[in-house]
Length: 180
Ligand SMILES: Cc1cc2nc3c(=O)[nH]c(=O)nc-3n(C[C@H](O)[C@H](O)[C@H](O)COP(=O)(O)O)c2cc1C
Image 1 (cartoon, rainbow, N blue to C red):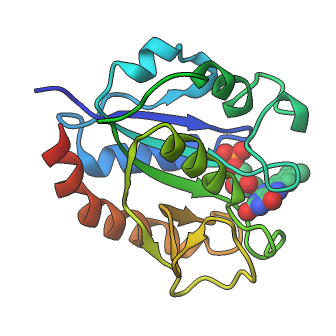
Image 2 (image 1 turned 90 degrees about the horizontal axis):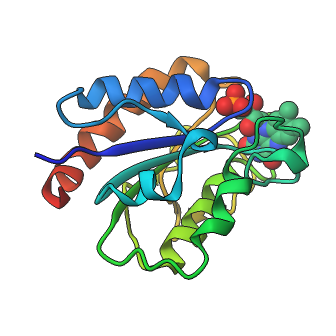
């Protein structure tokens, strides 16, 4: 059976760590080893029918990349390769990592950037998540009252992380498996 691909964009490693937790919860029979997007080719990503994409938020609510001092590059450098690519038929679940206490007016806006990019290219985005229990004031990643994917905050709500991952994986897993 084909597997789910998990790609993440990070600077200081939190989004990698949480991607690994998500992968572990899904199990290695279902998901391949998480890969930093700065080490992935377009073909790597396109080889999967079902994807989990994760990102931190940097700058003014942006994707991580060299422009906001992520020296090894990240999503910001990868995304231009998607120009003209049709992602119809792909199923994608998103997770975003941010800090709602310090950046509460643009919490996990990077996840909203990924959502817009991949949705515009025809992908089916699954795994929206309730805002209950979060304390931010604004986030572009909230559409119709829900996050467009799993929002995590390992800085100001670290104690909630494991339960959020467990709950989200349980919720989204059947939909991801059905799309494989
Ligand atoms: C300069 C800077 C800007 C940031 N901007 C945001 C932001 O706009 N929204 C947000 O939710 N988090 C923001 N963060 C918080 C990071 O996204 C958060 O610390 C995250 O855990 C980092 O993930 P990483 O370890 O995978 O790089 C910012 C952090 C820094 C240092």
